[in-house]
Amino acid sequence: MRILIFDPFHGAAGDMITAALLDCGADLPIVLRAMQAVVAEPKISTVTRAGIRAVKVDTRATPAHRTLADVLARLDGAAGVVPAPVLAMARKIFERINAAEESVHGAHVLFHEVGADDAIADVIGACTALHTLAVDGVVVLPIALGRGTATGSHGMFPIPAPATAAILKGTGLATLSGPDDGELCTPTGAALLAGFSTVAPKDLKTYTILASGYGAGSRDTPETPNVLRAMIIETITGKLPQDTVDILETNVDDVSGEVIAHTIALCMEAGARDASTIPIIMKKGRPGFLIRVICQNDRSAMLAELMARELGTLGIRCIPAVHRFIAERTIIEIEVSINGQIRYLPVKCGWMHGAIYTLKAEFDPARDWACELKIPVKDVILAIEDAGWKNVTNKHKDGAQ
Image 1: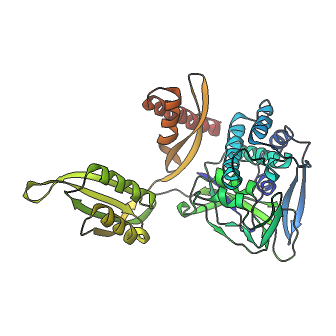
Image 2 (image 1 turned 90 degrees about the horizontal axis):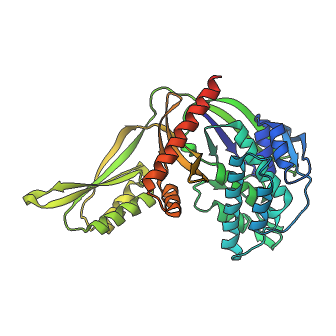
Image 3 (image 1 turned 180 degrees about the vertical axis):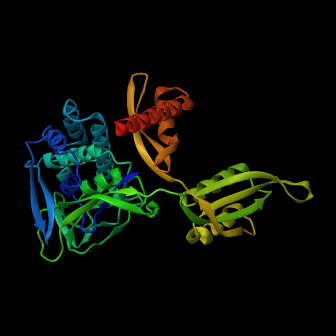
């Protein structure tokens, strides 16, 4: 399985992401053609940053202030040149940025730096470059944000910028201040990394490095290299990987189904790997339920307390360090067509010995589209998974040619 790793220890901006992917082997003519759909031909050069050779992308674009509708119109105008999956991904990136901007500045905001031609070109360039690499998943290592203050269209602000913080909130991506002062991660860079990430760093096991690339930023400081590193790796498959989990259990016979369902939902939100309810017959023939929660060891105490508080139980059994076999998994987006409408929806893939052996649609997006189409959700799930298997089969055939 081929995985792309971003290492933004020195920060990330849209042009740096595009450049790093180009240095990793992304198709330069296709990327240039996509970026030219919104700006003049970008300048691609090779530079050094603190002794490290890196690719530099200069979009040669001018500043502008636009609404989300203006930006999406620019994307729609590139439909004849830019691949449809790239435009769909770019649209999601800008919708993510817009949601963050609105959370900070209110509704109907104008994009400033992120609405300029260079930002639109950076997003399209990065999405196109990722598309041409055709990796099976993306890992984002901790993102350096910087420290101090910076000045933008809204005046001076503390680092990270409010929009950057809003974009990264809830993504699960790790951050750190980083080695340098100033803004190291821009809102565009944060949105791209958040939109690309599909695999958690902790899920990386052993692998071989197939390619590496460096994307340069504008600053050239002698102490630290202002570059973003990307690597393409091949995971080493063999036996199914293992880890250990704790199993928390308690029996209840005086709790309503609504409370049990609420407790399970809270446990999942708090980081449980799984949670379930099993009907049982307790002592004296009383009907009851076995509540079982599976979690990592570092969350056992917190989840046991949550279970006790919500269920009113007096004891939680803990079966510690249970070994389990786990399959590698990735989430990919699949083009799906139903009743003439096209959407790009996520499916979760399970891998064994370098091949996908199971594929399932993510329920929430499928349910939302089913409600829009006013058809049964099972029909939407079936269409998504059918499209997913066709996509996997076609990729396999292409690779065999």
